[in-house]
Image (cartoon, rainbow, N blue to C red; front, side):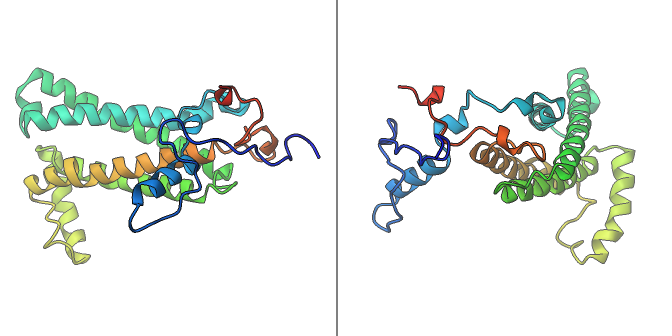
Amino acid sequence: MSAQDAAPVPQGPDPVTNATGTERFSWTRPSPWLRGYLVRNFPLRKLLSDHEPAYVSSILYTMGVLTLAALICAVISGAILALGGVSFWHTNSFGAFMNSTHFWSVQFMFLFMAVHFITNFFTMGWRGGRGWTWITGVIAFILSILTSFTGFLMMTNWDSQWIGQQAKDAFNALGIGAIWNVMNAGQQFTMHVVFTAALLLFVVSVHIALIRRRGVAPPPGAEDLEVPEDEPGHPAEVS
C-alpha cells in the first residue's frame, strides 16, 4: 500500500474553535455541532489554500475569478448609483461615469461567465462530488439574467420604457403582472438593488464555498493531478 492510499492521520482539535470535527447535532448545544461541521467541511487550509494543482494555470480556469471580479465592480458601482438616486446618472458627470462603469462591468461579467459556463460544461465540472457546485453555478447564471433584466427596467430612459412595455404583456400572461409590475420604476429599483442582487450574492457565496470545499475540477483524464485533501507533508499542515 502506498503512502497516498494510507488512511489520513487524525488531526487534533482546531486551534481556533477547539472543535475536533466529530461533534454531532444537539438541541441543547448547537454551537459545538456548527463548529464541528465547519471544521469538517471548511477548514482554513481549504478556504485559504496555498497549494493549487498545476492545471489551474490555464487561462480557462481564470474565467471564474474574472467573473467574480467583474461582479464586485458591478456591486460597488451599483451601490454608489443607488446612494445617488434614480436621476443621479442623468444629472451628474460622476454619476454618468459610475453608470458606464456599472454597465460595462455587467457586460464583462456575462462574457467571462459564459466562457466559464461553457468550459465547465464540456469538461464535466460536476465530477468528483461537485454536483452542487454545478447546480449553484447554474442558479447564479439564471439569477444574473434576472438581475440584469431588472436593471434594464430601471434605467429611467426611453430604452427602459420600451423594455417595460414589451415585458408587461409577458408578465401578465404568466399571471404575475399584478405582483411584479415592470412599469413601476420604484418597485424595479427595489427588486434590482435589494431582492435579486441579494439572492445572487448569496448563491455566489455558496458557489465559492463549495469550490473551496471540493477543490477545482480537473480536466477529463487528469484526475491524478488533483491535490489530495489530506496530503502528507502539506505546507499548511506543518506546525
